[in-house]
Image (cartoon, rainbow, N blue to C red; front, side, top):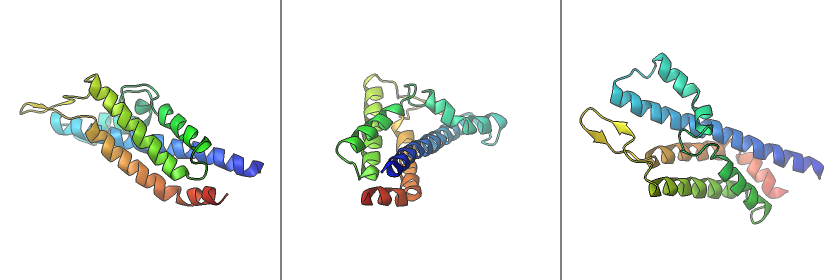
Amino acid sequence: MAQSTINRSWTFVIIWIVHIIIYYFIWGNIDNLMHNYYSKWDFFFDESVSRSLSSPIVGLLGFYDGFPFFVVVPILAMLVLISTLMKTRWQLAYFISCIGCYLGMYLYNAYIDKNTNLYQSGIGELSLNHIFLIIPALTVTMLINWVVFKNKYQLIKTI
């Protein structure tokens, strides 16, 4: 019995480490591409590469979400879900916690009007919301999570 608890705990930690690295890496690269496109940078310029590689740390510190260590919120939401309602349905708990928390964060930021006019274009002002960065980053992160941890989720279902 103790062995399954250790495996579940370790699996939970690994799921969220992979989430943090992939989500913020994708967010940072999209953000970097948008800045490069509208400021005529080269994507492989030294500053672009360093911004891209440091994006998980920058994201954790709250520069992308506007809330430092925001990722703790979906982690706690998933922890509550797998502790109460979805003891064997971890994949569904992961999806619900991510979608619910990131949508809530986006709505909160939209409410306080923190998301508009992120990028300046040469023609005029481009109004680009964070939702255009959240959706692709979260979609790819969830797909990679599903592919990488598919067997783990099935093992947890059978225990």
